Length: 166
Image 1 (tube, rainbow, N blue to C red):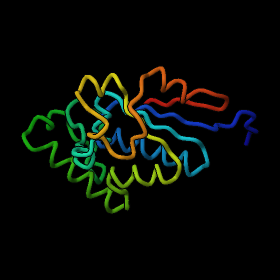
Image 2: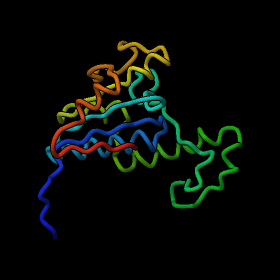
Image 3: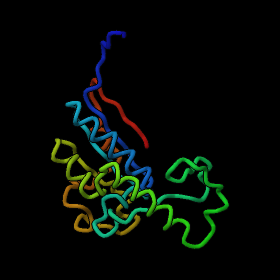
C-alpha cells in the first residue's frame, strides 16, 4: 500500500441527471465522503434537480432507453428496444426500488436527510433552477442555497479537494 501524501479532504459532487441510478450514485458517494470525515457538497443541476424537488424526489425512474448496460434485478441483460414498450420504464423502476428496499437503501428524501445529518451540504444550480422556473420553496428544505457555477467552484476549491461529475 502506498503512502498518500495528498489526502482528499473535500469532495464536491455534481449530479446532472435525474434517474434513480444517477441520483443514488451521487448520494452514495457523498454519504461515503461524510462517513469518512470529509467535507462533502452535492450540487444538483439540470435534470439532477429532480432529486431535490419536494414533489418529485421520491418518484424518480430508471432510464431504460439507450442504456446498453441495463440489467434487470437478478442480472439478466435487458435489450434496449424493450424500453419502448409502454409501462416498461415504470416496471423496471419498481423492480429497482424493490431490490433497493431489500438492501435497506433509503428513499431519496431519507438518504438526503442522512447526508445532511452527517455534515454534508446540498446546493441547487441557479441557471437550471431559473430555466425550470424553480424557487427555493420548491426544493427540499435541506438545500442550503441556489448558487451559480462560480459560487460552486469557490465552495469546491482548496487543497485536498476533488470535483466528481456523476
